[in-house]
Length: 332
Ligand SMILES: [Fe+2]
Ligand SMILES: [Fe+2]
Image (cartoon, rainbow, N blue to C red; front, side):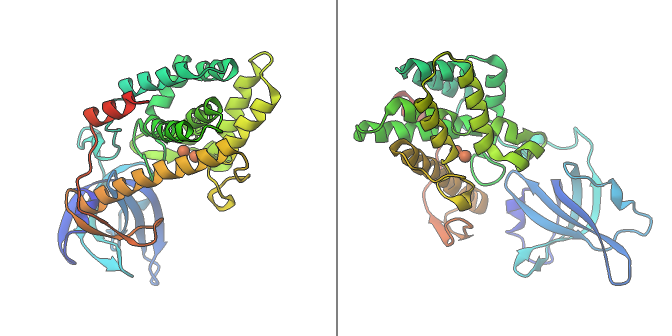
C-alpha cells in the first residue's frame, strides 16, 4: 500500500504497509505515558502517524530516522491532515519489502541521456568553457555520482537520475531561447545550465530514501556548485577572469529571488534566462509529479498545490518513456 492509497480510504478504515521513517519523536500524554509521533513516507508521499497507546514494556527508542517499518492501524484525520493511529509498528528486515517502493528512478534512459549531455558539451565552442565542462564530465568518479543524484528531496525530480533529467531539461530550454535571442552568449548559458546544480551531488545522499547531507543543509547547492566550478577553473591556465565572474554569477543567482535562496538576483542576460529556465523545468516537472502522487492514473482536481497555491486540474495522461525522451533530446 502506497501513501497515496491511504488518502483514498475512509476514516476508521484499517490499513497496513511498509514505510520509511523521516522523523520520529517520543512524546508524552498528560498522564506522563509515552507515545510516538512519526513522519512516514514512500515515493508517493509523506504523512504523520501516532502510535498512541504503545504496550507498557515497548522500547520506543529503537525507532530511528531512515528505518523501514511495518505498520498497521486505522485512518484518522486531524485538522484536515491525514494522521492515522497505529496499532502496531515494528522495524522491518531487509528482504521483507521492495526497496523500489521508497525511491524511484528517472523514467528516461540514464546512459542515453548522458550521451546527449556529452554531445552538447562537444558543441560548446569556447575552449575555456569546453575544457571546464570536460573536467567535470570526463571524470568517471564525478559522473558516477552525478548520474545517481536526485535533483530534489520532495519538490521535483526526487529520484535517482533526477539531476541528469533536470539538467537536460534546463539545457534544452536554454538552447531554444538562445536560438531565438541572438544577444545571448550561447556557450556561457549552456555551460551555466549544465553546471548550475552540480553541487547537488554533495547536497543529497541516496539510501533507502533521499536525504539532505549536513553539508547540503549548512551550505546549499548554489554555494557548493560555485565552489566546485571555481576550483576546476583554477586548474585551467589563463581562464578569463570576466568569463569566470559571469559564469559564477549565473550559478549563484539561478534561484532568481533572495527568498528562494539566491544570494544575488540575476543581473545578466544569461543569468536571467537560466533562472527562468530552471524555474520552468522544475515547475512543469513538479506539476507532473504532484498529479501522479495525488491522482495516480486518475483525472480531475488535486488538493491545493503548495507552490501554485491553488488546486490543479489534469485530465490528460502523464507521458514519459524512451521514445519521448529520445526524440526530444535528438533535437538538441
Ligand atoms: Fe538549484
Ligand atoms: Fe536547477
